[in-house]
Image (cartoon, rainbow, N blue to C red; front, side, top):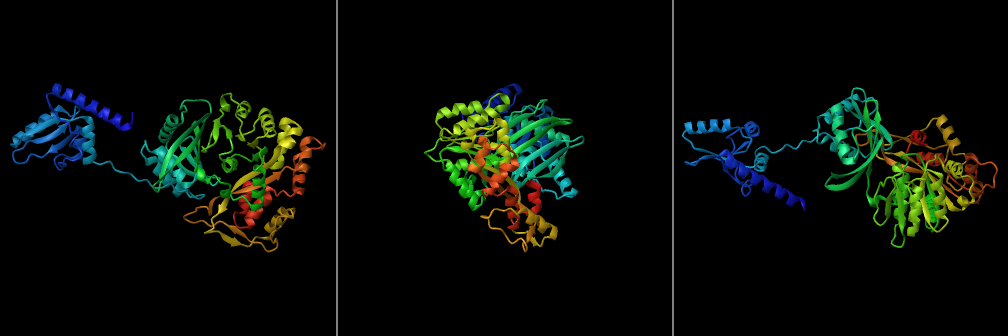
Length: 540
């Protein structure tokens, strides 16, 4: 049944019960449905407070011998009806009271006293030490209506481009922080009763318990309208009990499928050519490595989208599914309740996929199953926790041992980070000091010959300049990517042909083959004016 039909049935029921009550109360019943939106308002007869408190509305002004008519409800005090009757009769006027439904009363009151649309100030991010902005935003959030505070918080986070909202219990208040462009910023301090409202909204929408003593995970979706355009916001909710209550982190995924393109990742020409060549092959394994929040998922989804054609069967295994992609079979794997990627992967391989994405390789069983799949005619994409490409091999060898099959399966490992991008409209060029020049020269001293090296004696750098539009001098983030193509020199370590295996030796072999490290890519980006050395040091 559609919503209009449900509302109509409720109104019918309301009118029927009101008509029955009219006979009991000795009043005439009046069905206002035909005229409640068009009847001219009889203003100036009763004040708004009386109309609200006594549940009564004027319907008709008594002109030229006509009676004054008022709509009353079952909650209108009988004493008021008697007093008004006596008063009008004393002035030689007749008066009638007609029983109307609660629904009709609400319609009339919305006309007599339209609900006020409250517009709250947008949240501003405070600069370090700016307590005035913090206090102002706190005051705004504490004044937002109870039924609006959660939606307002999420809407503002989306407007600011935040990736996370952190809600943290302190002894005397609730601290709200938001992560914007990878950096966490204080936003407001809330009264504790605000938190109960927010937690209640999370409980009902993300299906979590407010009384749990265990960490919880939930998921919800929210439509956000901005400048007349509506987009769907996915929120991943994580809560954990702390000393003063449940802390919550909301991860926001403002996802537009059209943005899932490798063209939007800002990958360099050489790295893009390597990546395109690897993923164009029908088999093999590609690993994405990096810490949480380094953009691994976005890069993997962009690769999936590039491969998403009508002649390929693509299946993903995810915990949880963060983005929905048309044309791809996405399977949720609930590892917290006993399911495993390995079991799910063995099942989906029977479905004859061309490309499989495994959300994350966490154990030896999943690793071995993924490797087996990649040498039997499947392209397998996955993420893996390691800091660098060479460290990924060391960790994988620790996980599954020296494995000749792995050496022929793995084709590419990508390590990546996200660094804040300087605002091109405000950034300022400067001459670095001698210590900085020496550090940069040292960082780029082993840059492979195929990469164009800038003039390290005359280079300039850029620094952020704060403006109203970008309070930190940065705007968005860029990808810094290290790609290790697995060649014969690297494969010998994975086969066990070399007695001594550790991260440095594997990295040296890859470097000799022309790999550019994360640090080198980051420093080169700073020399191009895309970011700062401070950002590179903070992230890489």
